[in-house]
Image 1 (cartoon, rainbow over the protein chains, first blue to last red):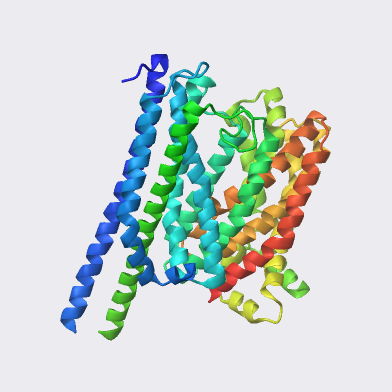
Image 2 (spheres, one colour):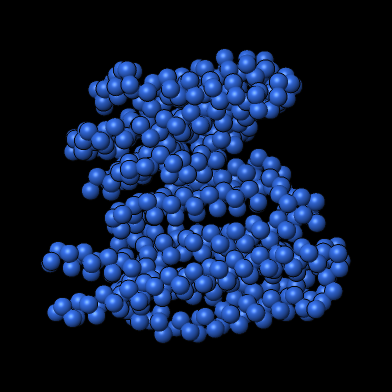
Length: 51
Length: 243
Length: 218
């Protein structure tokens, strides 16, 4: 751990906030992508079944 | 071989699917390397102390916040002129990414500003224009969400994006005129003597490259999601019609 | 075109047309300001130009959702779209009617309300000029926003969200002219920029509004 001096709070909170936002964005993106993909597969299998 | 081949959703999906893993991995790798390098292996600035490390998040996110809007402008134009659905959906997919990038730039800026300028927020031109950009993003996304018919939504949001771009640029100049800034000039530019020192700029370039790749990966992935969501809607509608 | 203008004016002036509501809103916002920031006359004098500009802008904003919505509901917008008059002309006339029924009364009322806020004497002229030059831009930009949201059920809030960022440059230059005027400084630069924004908006935005309306009427 580098010595951040008196600005440790600022630096760490900036990194934490940014990483949280980035990770949240990626997770939301992946989550929605998975959901839509699953829906698509369900729908396609249903359509195939019904001919 | 031309770029317009990717206007075909199937072709777009197939190609992006193939490059997706490379994009995810390389962007994650670049961002990690850049941030670790920046966080652990750069010295403190003699004036800013350790807060200089915030630059490795602030500058790349600000860069992408503007470029995301620029990309939306280009894809909106492509939609208006050539009416490729993938293009409109890519613009839609990019907007939330742009919002998050704007938010990161604003938050890291505020956290940096507190110890350095002695205030979280100042009505400085750059800060203010970013806030205005944020509002533009919100309006754009809200308009997409509000309209049911996908083609109407694509048309209206594209025109909003075009008009909004003009007004965003106008606001930038208006805000410049309205208040003198605290914000330093460009951190990196080709034609200037006084750039950020090399110790800082090298990890910064790595982070910027990482953010660019992350943006591309996110937009590709989200565009794929939007294409599928659109397809699902169409399939369900057809099913209802046949039933 | 003239007939359309008179029709719109008549509809707005008739009972239930909402004429005067914007004016009343402007009045009440101005009256509320001293309640919220305190009655010190120096403070009020300093913020008067900005408050009057913001009040006029909000009053303008609130009247926007009626601009096209009524014609949309009763179908006369479809008729106007098929009329020989190009849609660009129609939206320009609509914006003009909106400005005459909303913008112009606001401009004329502003000096009266300036008295309430203790606006310095030399500021009245520039307040009037800046509003006179700026409110047409507000109407034209607002027409674009109204055209974007015309088909939506609850477009009111969305309309505000869309139009507000577009109002930023107009507000900055307009309020700057009024502020400099009140403080007795040179006003030429912001005045020219404000006039430029208005002229460019009036010249170009009707095309965007008409394009948007065509999409919505499809």
